[in-house]
Each structure stands twice: as C-alpha cells, then as structure tokens.
Length: 437
Image (cartoon, rainbow, N blue to C red; front, side, top):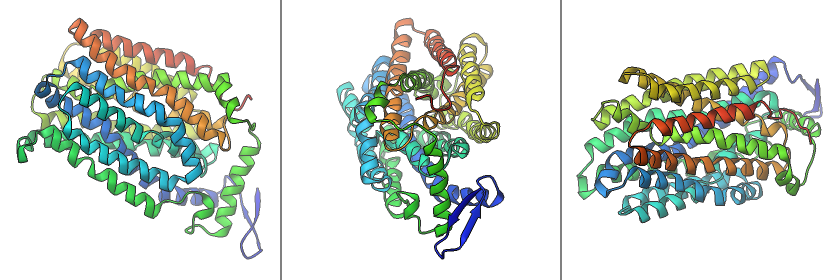
C-alpha cells in the first residue's frame, strides 16, 4: 500500500495493484501513448518508403542490389554516431523539445531524398537522415521509464511499438499507390513524390509533440496532485531497489554488452526483412506496385495483433524471456521456410511469419534493460545498447543485397538472417531480468 499526501493535506491510499491504480495507468497510457505511437509510425515510414522506392529507383538510376542495400543500411551509421549524444541531450533539454526536433528535421531531410541522382547522393542523404532520427526510439523507451513501473512497462512498450507495423499497414499501400499513379506528374518520378508526400506527417507530428507532450509526471496538469504523487512514489520505490551507477560503469558492465549484442542479432534479422519485403513480394509474381503495396501490408496488419496480445501476456506472466526466445526461434524457421517451401502462397506465409516475429521481438527485448538501469545513466545505457543494435541495421540490408548479387539468388541471405535470430535466441537465455550490479 502506498500512502501519499494529497494537495489538500488529506491522506490518499492507492494500492499499486488495485482497480484505482489500473484506472490511473490507463489514463496515463491514453494520454501519452497514442501520440508516441503515431510519431513512431511516421518515423518508421523510412523503412517502408525506401523499400518501395527501390522498386522504381533502382532501375531508373541503375542501382544494383548491393548499392541499394548499402544505401538503406548506411542510414544506421549516421544513427549510430548520433545516438548516445542524442539521448543525453534528451535528458538535458526534455523529451518534448527533443522529440519535436527529431521529427521536424527528419521530415525535412526525408523530403530532400527527391534530389537523389547517384549512389553517392543516395548514401549521403541516407547518412544524414540517420543522424537526424537518432535517439527517437531509445529516447521513448527512456521516456516510458519515467511514467510506467517495471510491472506495467512491457505492455506500454509493446503498444508504443505498434507504430512500426502501423507504418507498414498505412505506408505500404500508400507507397505503392504513389509509385503507380504519381509517376511523371510535374516532371517527378513516383518515388520522388513518395518521399515528398510521406515527409509531411513528420513535420506535423513534431509540432504536435511541442503542443501536447509533457516532459515529466510533475508537468502533467491533466493529473491531480494525488495522482502525480502516486506515480512518482511508485517509480521512486522501484528505483531504490536498483543499483545506482555512474555512466562510465554503464559502459564497462558486461550485462550492458550482453544486451547490446542480443539486440544486434535481433536487428540483423528484422531489418533484413523490412528493407527487402516489397522486393520479395514482387519476386513471388506480383508486378503492379499498388498490389505489391496491399500485399506487403498484410504481414504488418497481423503483427499489430501479435504485438498487442504478446505484450499483454508477457505482463501477465511477469517475464518476457520465453516469448522473446520463441519469437527468435520461430522467426529463424520462417526464414528457412522462405527458401525451402514451394509456391508463392507458402513463401508469402513464411514471409508473414518472419515479419510478425521480427516485429514482436523489440518491445519484448526492451523490457530487459530498464530492469537493470535507473536514473540518468539509463539514457546513456539504453542509447549504447541501441547503438550497438543498429549496427545490424547497417549490416543486414547491405549483406542481403551483396549476397543476392554474388549468388544470383536470395537463399543464402535468408540463411544468414535465420542464423542471426538463432544466435539471439541463445543470448536471450543469459539476459539478466533483475539488476545484478
């Protein structure tokens, strides 16, 4: 039982597990999560639109699979270099202003992709785009730590991550439609129109963040004094049970690096599928880009259901480990099945399963680091973990493209992605769930 003083001086009792607490956390979730989900969907349009741009841009500009894969992946090098500084600046200037900066600059640079004329310009713009977006995902993970205690964080993180499949559900048909119907309008190709149109929501959401988001619980005028006190008290109790450490100790701790390399393997498989999904769909026999967009949306639609259900069950069970382990193993089997099964229908089913497993993994994984980290070093620690992880975002698209060019077939690239998820499954067995520092 948490006993708190309300603003009027009376004593207010809210049990951390009772119905009143459930209502309060639901109120918090409805206030902050819809906006963050939409922002993440807008940010994730990058994975969707560049994968669809490849369908036209590669042939029109003479890009090989290796060139496309390197350009898609080099985004994460810029992301990597700016990640830790970005998250530390978020802690200093506040989530509201920093998230707005990320979204507005991301939109402006994404629109500049219309000026791509060569592999070099493609690489430069993708690199700068990665620097602009760096820090948003780990920043939100850190931000959610400031609102939700550990026993409610799995579901909140899973709900936030719905932005990724939502981007696929909305962005895939939209991108396919723009490619098909806007090509040649005002002397621009369809892929150029796609980058222009899909950059507008990023700027709009940046403005919305400035107007709507609160930096911390104490700033939330929509909560009563009693509610703010309870939320802060719950987090304070939890933080007292975790070890406090200096930022330099975060960078030296073996558990942090175990987290980081597990995420690296997860992201390898995930981005290997995301950046190549429309191409794989096209290779099953579809040619019309509008149809490819509609078919590509199906795996993301199913992933929305999976993320919601698995997040709720992980919270109920009190552990994300078996769910993460199962997703890694099942996803690896799906990659192998994409090569071994015969027929377009079975291949698309395997593709859907791989996409769903990859989508489920990240929100499950990111319930582990907050159980070890606390306070301001958490911002740098989570950014470090994510920075190592996003190296997989560079390696995977480039590796897939290079293997496709070298072998002339997708099989070896699928085996490589399957291996990365099997390694992630092995590492998952050793992840600490409670602080050991």
